[in-house]
Image 1 (cartoon, one colour):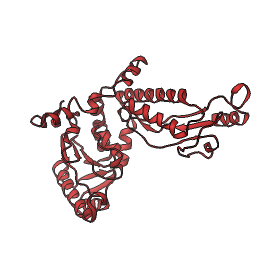
Image 2 (cartoon, rainbow, N blue to C red; image 1 turned 135 degrees about the vertical axis):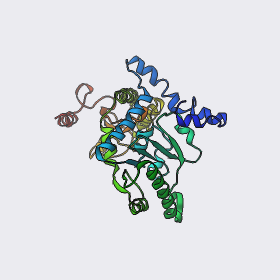
Image 3 (tube, rainbow, N blue to C red; image 1 turned 180 degrees about the horizontal axis):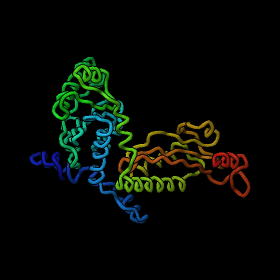
Image 4 (cartoon, one colour; image 1 turned 90 degrees about the vertical axis):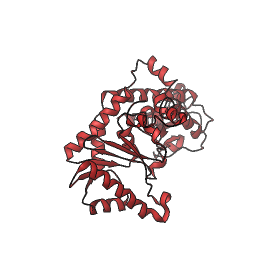
Length: 328
């Protein structure tokens, strides 16, 4: 472990130090089969500390370009970008229980669940971890406005300390109480999603290495799916293989369930069902997965299940025509 958060765990219980050090899932890494497969493919692993530094630098550069003194992020994808930390990623997409601040000077503060500071010990880029104040109705109930006020008061104190007078602060998303009270306190609030999208739009060398690993893991899993595709299995049984292969190779989640077979392939955007795949069916899907290193991999594929219904076991004329139209 290295960095301020790791140093703060020096006197913690052995279990906590291990959880923040050698036991941390991002420190352990994707493991096999992914590592062995990437080595076989000649891929180079990313330098994660360098990637984390690059991302903070990208954010501060965008803050300077747009004239902001700092940014508050509550979108889990943006929190991951600026801190490379995870904690219940899908759950916090609908419960604002984690958030972060990045100052124009590069100072990074992460707010996380109470007692979860060890989850940030792997990164040297995080300067502070504080207990988060949950202000959604699910977390705070009828006291949500009170909790949102507490959230805002702490954020104003941070802004005052790090940004000086007449601050301009970008926010990617926030509860309405926070927006109002920040402005009442004299904070000029800007559109943080623009800052983050522009920061994320140019990938660094190590991000590209991470993307190549994630794509390879996805393609390898797709090869396993194709080999396992057998008439008589359901769409969901085939789809489950994508989940399994993604998780086994260090992936995190899949954002959609877009897989369909036979008559369900048109119109598109239909989700996985218990329909039994029949011989000669077209099976089509989008991966839409968040894979290794938190990288999104979106690949589409269309296969024929078993032996085709056309000449010599190939596609039918209608299937081939549809395919040709897609290629145009």
